[in-house]
Length: 252
Image (cartoon, rainbow, N blue to C red; front, side, top):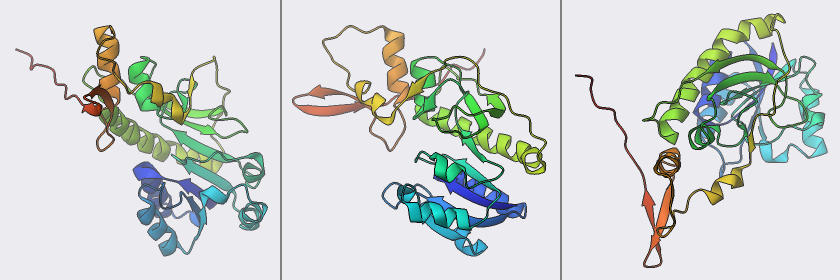
């Protein structure tokens, strides 16, 4: 199929690479600008090898960019960890719709940082392959896989689990999507939603405040994600950052 990929991060890179190996016709890759991109060089290199054009994702609201995407005559869009909202003019460019791989068990943790919120709010974690619609992470579900959260997980380790589970789910379900046999069902329940800025109220630990030990530990481990600085407290006017390493004792 003629495919346009909207991709960022390691998982986006791996999904684009896998689609190429399946023989799909990659006609364009939409990426983050350099200052926001992760694995951007690798994704651009794949596009170059495939003879696909590269489009700056920050320009998706510009009419000429929308028309450029329409002119590609792609059958389907594939979004993987892409940080810009795809509006209806872009979605309507794909006769077979646009699918998204989201690292959360929708409807829980729509939006940003689902790995963090599954630890902090103890909501179910997982990955979801779904169709995109006009809202954020609300489209019909194609397939899901729950990912258990261990008491020793940090934001980093859970993110890695979600990446691995997401790539496996995508690879398993792509043939049915390609053939048109994939079933879809509406999301059920209110779920949860978070914006990028919602983490701003989590990070500071106030030394004179009382906390439940579990709640404080969950915040610290959720924000343990090097090289990001994570949670902190203030001492002598300076931030002191806190990270944790957790391990369970070996069974006797």
